[in-house]
Image 1: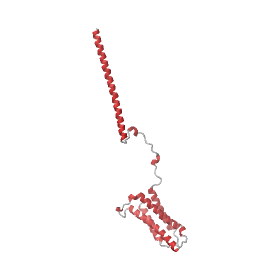
Image 2: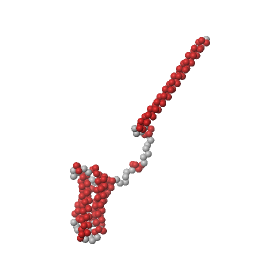
Image 3: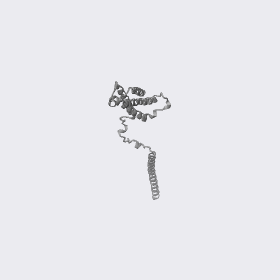
Image 4: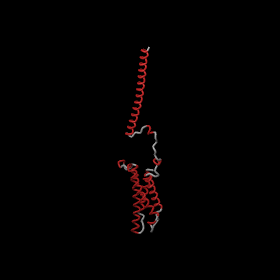
Length: 202
């Protein structure tokens, strides 16, 4: 009887040992597979970070951008150019409406003179901001009658007209003591050119 029980017991022990070893080996393989997957994930995240690409986990976090980044400026360079041009035209019109009927011994203190001077100075500022803002819109190869080219040309002529009117009046005042009416034609030409320049792009 003993010669049968002993081999059976040894065989059972062998089977248990083999099963346990196989189970342990299977567990080790699962652990190694987990470890391998974790290493691959870490490798992928490192590659994404190296390439400047965000992973899915980092993409889920919203960046902290202040609201001021989305606020529009109160006034843009283009608006500044537009308002300066309109102000120049407005003061030119005021100068025309306040022109004295005859001799004015106090020309340099008159509304007419101050409005005319403001007209050409604001116009010069409009030209400067226009060149700064719209330099890429001006192309001579597009021809003289291109709308943008005409706007630049007429706006500049308008300011030159305003300036020549003021200069002529002051020269007359300094030489003979009062301005002649010769400067009026330059002022009228400047006003017409300025109005047309603004109307072209309105």
